[in-house]
Each structure stands twice: as structure tokens, then as C-alpha cells.
Amino acid sequence: VAYHHGDLRRSVLRGALELVAERGATGISLREIARRAGVSHSAPAHHFVDKAGVLTAIAAEGYTLLAETTGEAFEGDGGMAAVGLSYIRFALSHHAHFEVMFRPELYRRDDPKVTAARDAAAEVLFRTVRRTLGDADEREVWGSVVAAWSFVHGFATLWLNRNFYEEVGDDPVAAAALASGSLARLVEAGAFPGGAPGSPSR
Amino acid sequence: VAYHHGDLRRSVLRGALELVAERGATGISLREIARRAGVSHSAPAHHFVDKAGVLTAIAAEGYTLLAETTGEAFEGDGGMAAVGLSYIRFALSHHAHFEVMFRPELYRRDDPKVTAARDAAAEVLFRTVRRTLGDADEREVWGSVVAAWSFVHGFATLWLNRNFYEEVGDDPVAAAALASGSLARLVEAGAFPGGAPGSPSR
DNA sequence: TGTACATCAGTGAACGCGCGTTCACTGATGTAC
DNA sequence: TGTACATCAGTGAACGCGCGTTCACTGATGTAC
Image 1 (cartoon, rainbow over the protein chains, first blue to last red):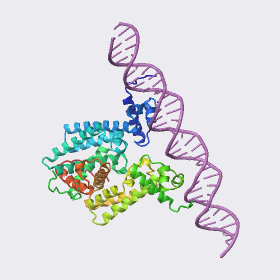
Image 2 (image 1 turned 135 degrees about the vertical axis):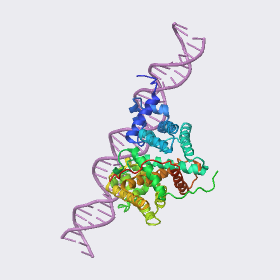
Image 3 (image 1 turned 90 degrees about the horizontal axis):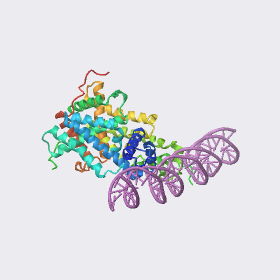
Image 4 (image 1 turned 45 degrees about the vertical axis):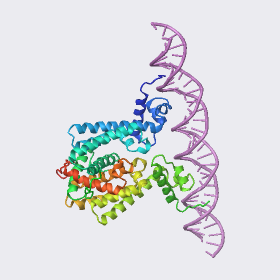
């Protein structure tokens, strides 16, 4: 038996991510994670305290990866479309991370590593909105962040849950581009009124 | 002991919904549902076969309620904003139903009652989009349905998961209205290009 | 109207199982001298 | 360089528990005659 596994942390996280991808964040057990990782059944608890500890580590890693991915899109072409698309791509390519990240009741959402990584990811979104809007008061920035985030997040979750009908096709990037263009058309048609920026809230 | 409970089905569903609201759709057991409903521990299985059966009934009921709620908004003022807002209101006021509905791995998504109710809810959205766009080819309709659905669904899920920061405030309707208005502003700024309607797909 | 019987909704004891947790342990690594 | 010892990552047997499922049952309701 090889003591001092050396990379037990990564092995456990890899096993947990595999299981989340296969069966969802629900109904995975520490013992099953251990079996998948090829370590003793008490090793995950030894390292991560409990299941929430494992999922907290996955959430922190996920937000870090998301911040990196969207950050690169921001640094490159940099438009809102490119950043939004990178968000969607992240969700689809890191399904397990994404699922855990947005199920905060399963982990410790106030863990310092989680909040730091989440703030870093949010920061990219704020920077993208500010660059897109040019001059805008804080209220408009917040509204735009909420709007853009809602759009890409809703698209990603509905796509992952297979809630769109077959007619939408099987290419998420094409579907997202179509929806993005349609958004403009809907706005022109007056579908999204309201929220006329009143006095700036700060 | 009162045999022939008379409304065991409703009691079980009510107990299950309470537990989902308190603890999430994850980690609720048939025995706990039975305890909450005040029936024997084997009653839920007797009626619903298994946990997926209970959640399937909740999902079907949820989609039916959603179709009714958005349908009323469509029949009333009828604009996309009103229908979208009714979707968000439904999600917040029927948290437990909403959570189950969009976690299809937990229930039988192909159950006839579920598909019928889901189709009815989708139909309201399609009718709203068609009315908003006036003349539009099918491709535009699909794109708009995906866009509008993504927006309101993303907003609702992010709100329920408490992913927005405090600065957004505690009034979801006001926040949604602000985001809706900001969407228009973002479109003007060219944030959502792409999806230029090519040849109609059918 | 009265009686007999079939049906079926709901019960509760019993089972075997996988789980998280505990705890005494093993043995590899690092440090002191 | 060599020896002794402390540290700590990881192990594995044992435990008690809540779970889903099974199955013989109870008793209320509906129907046949």
C-alpha cells in the first residue's frame, strides 16, 4: 500500500467531478468518491472534512476557471458577445463545476476561496459592462450586469437541462448567436420596457 | 387509525413540497415525506411507486400552474414584459415546484402529464413571441423564444440562488424591470450582435 | 332493504444495505543532533 | 553520514443509523343478488 499518496486532493476532486458529471451533484457519497479515486473510504473526509468540503473546493476551482476563461475573452476581442459566449462555453465544457457552483446549498458559499474566486469572476463581468456602456451611472451598470448575466446563465442552464426543443438544433454556439440576435429584434419590438434609469442610486 | 385517508395524494405532495422548500430537492427521503404528511412510511411508495414518482407529480403540477399563470398574463395586458414577469413571479412564489421542474434528472421527464403540461406552458411563450414580433419566420420565432426564456429563467434562478449581490436590492420585480430596461440599453450599445436571420429554416 | 363478498387504500413489522463517523493503526517524510 | 524521533497523510475495521423495499395484514367502500 502506497502511503503518502502525494496527490490525494486532486484524485478525490477528479473522482468527485466524474461522479457529478455522471449522476449530478445529488446523491454522490464520500465512499463512492473514494472508490472512484482509488483511495480508502475515509480519505476524502480526512482531507476535506465532509462532502460540503469537497464541493466547496470544486466550487472555488470552478469560479477560478470561470474568471480565467471570461478574463481571456475580455482581454482578447473583449466585446460583451465574446465574454458572454465564453461563459456559455465554460458552462458546457465544465458541466460538473458549473452545476456545483450554482447549487450553493451544497457547499460553504462563504468560504474565503469561494468568495474570492466568485468576486474575481464578477469583476470581469462588471468590466465588460462598463466598457460596453461607456459612460453609465452605477444603477445602469448593475441593471446591465443583471441583464447580461441572466441571459447567458439562463441559456446555459436551459441548454444543459435539455429544456430547449429539438428544433433549436444541437449547436449551442449557433443557438446562442441566434438568440443574441433575436434579443435585439425583441427590444426593437418593445418587448423589454421598464427600468428607465431614474436618479443614480449612488 | 383512519383507513382510506381520502386525500393521501395531496397530503404527500404537500409534505414533499414543504421539504423541498426547506431543504431543496436533494436529500429528501420517502420516509421523511411520509412523516411530514402524517401517514405511514410506506404510503408514498404505495401511491407514487418511488421518489421519482412523487417528483414527477410535482413537476406536472408545476408546469400546469406555470401555464395557467403565464396564460393569464398573456390574456390580460399580454405584452412580453407582462408574461415574462409572470414567469418570474411564478418561480419565486412556487419555489419548490420550480426547483423540481428544472431538475429533470430527478423525475420522469417523459411522463405524459409532464410533457403535456410542459408543452402547454411553452405554447404560451410561443404565442407571446409571435404576437410581439408580428410577422416573423420560424427561425426568428425560435431564436426569440430561446432569448426571452433564457433571460427570465436566468434571472429567476440566479435570484433564487441568491447569486446577485446585495446592491441589486431585495425587490425582484424592481430588479427585473431594471434589467429589462438595461437590456435595451445594451442592445443599443451593440452588445448582442449575431444571429442575423439568414434563410428561414422552414 | 339486507347480506355476502371482492376490491383496494393504507398499515406496520422486518429485512438488508450503504452511508458517515470514529479511532487505533501504519509507515513515509522531515528534522535534530 | 548516520541515527532517533516527531509529524502527519492515509488506512481499514467497527459502529449505529436512516433508508427503500417487501409482505402479510386491516378495514372501509362498492357491488351483486
